[in-house]
Figure (cartoon, rainbow, N blue to C red):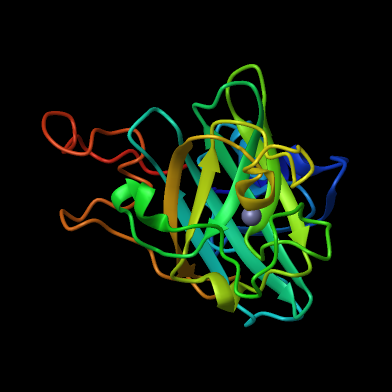
Length: 253
Ligand SMILES: [Zn+2]
């Protein structure tokens, strides 16, 4: 953003959008603070509809900034990949939001697994995180594995965008573990299959990622650079290596 008309354009892009409660644009700091219940990918898409680049620098609750945030970068042996963020917004509420691509359209089980071990891809992540020895269930069931997050739903393009609030899972219990998305629907323990009470019978593990601590809101003021000095702004539309990476930088709008 280079001038007040940019600020206006950015503000307009989020005006009257359902789920957006407030927008503060800071031209000096080159930042936009959005108070919202929308998934961050939708906010980013709205901001980028103005022709500018936007990068998520942090998420948080402005009243309770330090309860913690984490992120899982998910991948596997196939085409499925995603980014899922965890944010403990209060002692009783963990917000989980993300985007997973490359899925078959329809429901897919999503679970926190016991181990943050991806040395054998998702096979080494262990079973669903279950410190209380409960049976498998759905996210709203009082009896469930703590890691049971139910299903996410992929659209016709194979993309699942989701935002859920969980009262049982605590961020500090899952950092260092893993998040896994499965090929099929989680029956939430109600399917009558021998695996229903164990895994929800949700099939093969498609992609997984270690849940790692990340910056919350206002905790990440630095500009992240790769070793060759390109900032995350500059490298966005360039290859990771080789011809084309060293082109002169286009300043961000
Ligand atoms: Zn389970």
